[in-house]
Length: 346
Image (cartoon, rainbow, N blue to C red; front, side):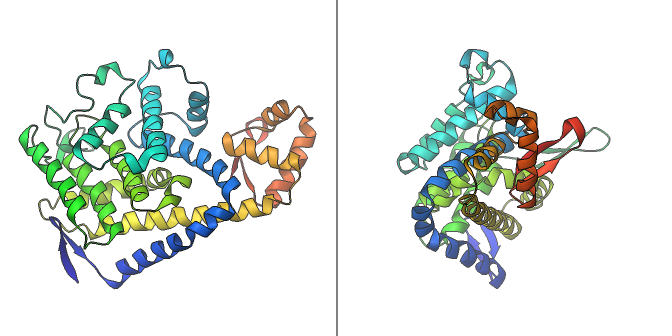
């Protein structure tokens, strides 16, 4: 059944509604899971934050690995944030941390969004002229062709009143629409924001942060214990292809494909969360030394046995023996060979 929501067409077929039902069934059981898994969730939230910060900035071109992001955020020195990647990582972390702590008090209004954007770019002096303000120059979305030329996929609203009007219409619709299913509203908000491209820079990062903010404000608290950004990065090509295929139809496009992509990503991170919680249950029977090794690997993906031995002050052969046991239990994953062997958590 094709229906119109805001300015879009959506095919509300049985498959789409089944996805909504699947996500909401998980959400209905979350409060009891949260009470039961309190201690485990604190560790998962820390890991999810690092993955989200790393993934969302890499989608936009950052070269920092999750391990490098972790090291930077644990030893952050604002005076040394001189390169673009570090500035973007620190800014994204600040916004994500703010959303996690204060989402109930952050309004989904134009000013609320502008303030988040100002925080996102707070460490970049080069962006000082436009952070927290709508764009002053046109920023059409383009694709780079094999011959090096660029092709305009679609034109975003012009700077000035067109952008202001588009953003005003979006936030007013989101506030007033009480009929559209909440999850569809969240997906639509992220899509339309990045399609408007209201800021000179940072629109992709902001769209993903707004997804988390909207989901938290709508009661989907489990989103802070997973990394939606990491799932999007994993499907980066499909992410851009889906956006562009819908945006190429503007205005009044059919965004069913985008809604499907967004919902499937949510279901995948839900499944990942349950697997991690199941692993935490298995970990309850592990020795303190085994738990310590898994914690180190979770906090620092790509860790080598020698690094673990040094941190725990135990012999490297002992660490390798325990790592073998954890591999057999499928609690960690091994990468590389020889001196380059390293480990990540599953």
